[in-house]
Image (cartoon, rainbow, N blue to C red; front, top):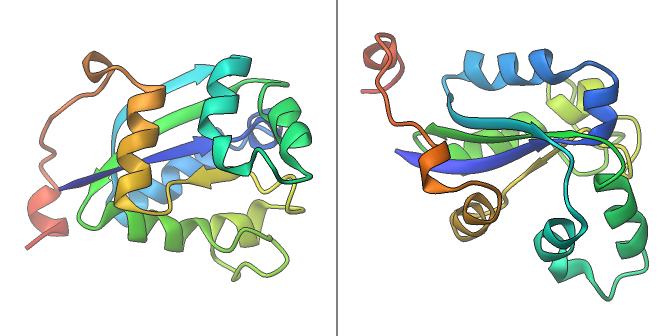
Length: 149
């Protein structure tokens, strides 16, 4: 089973969308193995978005992600990175397919409600940034036999 990092951003937390977004991930068959509501420290935001440091939107991105709580999660499932990325949809909500989280709930690129790791390598890096190993659970669900072969 693969794990990936998903973060419900401040805009979605403020709009009370945590439950709707978690439900979509779980309905698809992904299992929540770690979660926390938190206000992101400046240093974590800068490390997480470090690859964007030279881009013109970097300072606004850091200000936004630290402005209000986020709901950080680790979800697990077969091909979890790709499955979650398809559920999340395109970065720009106006280009995201209807039925995706961003397509249905996002408003603009700057307020696109959710972040998801874009590769297995990114997922491993982001999970390690946001969660201690002790904060992650390993468990089986009875329906696992109906979700996976």
